[in-house]
Amino acid sequence: MPSLGGFRRSGAALVALGVIGGLSAGPAYADDPKGTARWSPMVVSASAECAVPSKDVEGVPWSLQRVLLNQLWLPDSTLPKEKQKPIDGDGILVAVIDTGVDNKNPQLADKVVDGGAFIKKDGQEDTGPATADQVGHGTKVAGIIAAGKSDKTGFIGLAPKAQILAIRQNDAQGSGDVPHLIDAINRAIQMKAKVINISQDVRGTGADGDFDHKPELEKVLKDAEKARIVVVASSGNDGLEGNTYPAAFPTVLAVGASDRNNERASFSQYGTFVDVVAPGVDMLSTARSYGQCVDNGTSFSAPYVAGVAALLKQKYPDWTPAQIRARIEQTAERSGRDRNDYTGWGVVDPVKAVQSNAEPEDEPKPEAAVQLDSARIVAQPLGLAETQQDRDSRTALYVLGGGLLTVAGLGGASVVMRDRRKARGEGS
View 1: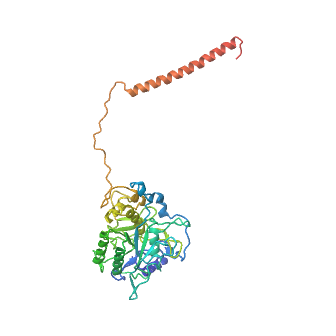
View 2 (view 1 turned 45 degrees about the vertical axis):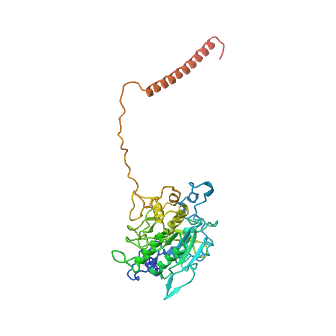
View 3 (view 1 turned 30 degrees about the vertical axis):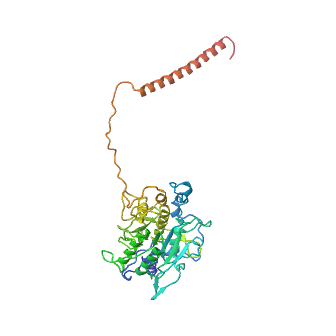
């Protein structure tokens, strides 16, 4: 995805066009070095509002309003009572390979593990801590996954008891590159992460999408698969068709962005590689230092799905990454029977994915086509004889008619007796 510098150029173009509140168009890649890792650009108006510190937002963001959180975190009912506990991400380490994660935000305090920095800047290796986030991008990503509960805001992470392994691999200048991304993934494997979130991408050249160190990147992702780590990556924000990496590798769950109408967001990269989509418009999350702010992009759709993956890893610790991916895909809300290139298998449904007790599958399947029952339709015989239903109806009619006659008779008799008394002078 484009560097912040490229995004600023796009933002300037948007300002000139008078659509500052809209979503940025995809910048050209011609000037970008081959093999540069790019993280999702942010909407100008949204990123400008992310003051440091920000304020608490009291309401519940729309991306969480569509989730019944009290059902999402219910214990696994298939376990014995003494072993049941909330499915809230407890014990799951999620690696966030990004711009760092600011652990000073109260909703992230005591849950961020420093995984180190893998970034080269001005020719020098940056060895600063991963808990230093000068951009705020990684802090927002981490919050969507694991922000803790706060009485001051309705925002909370989908896996609020999960831990975050912060690995700083990019910055505001887009200094991240593929070799350092490979090193960062290796660090996540070494530190035994259960889920890895990568909200950045590499766009290759040519029909095969080639870029420098592509085979090495694919290999380290296969190593993560062997280590039973679920890897989730954003599809990109160009709004165009075509593969982006690492999302397009088969062992990675590729996530695009959906809007409030469960449709593909206009900026979301699409193609045959997209597996699912998740909310990515007006996404509220943790800001640097304090509070929350809003942002847009597939960068914030991916951690939404990574949070669901963390819950599934807690519930099914023995499942393979392929089975976790298939459960998320199979339970997504679809617009048709099969996947499509715009929304993949559909919009992720966290509650359905986590609370389903279906048997694990390695691949998602199209919904079964609606078929008429193959059994012959046998016509009932037509007879002239009186049926039991006919007899019951006739009996009911007789009873009703008899009752009405009785009432009428009693009423008439009383009138006759009254008239006779009046004729005799007996009074009424």
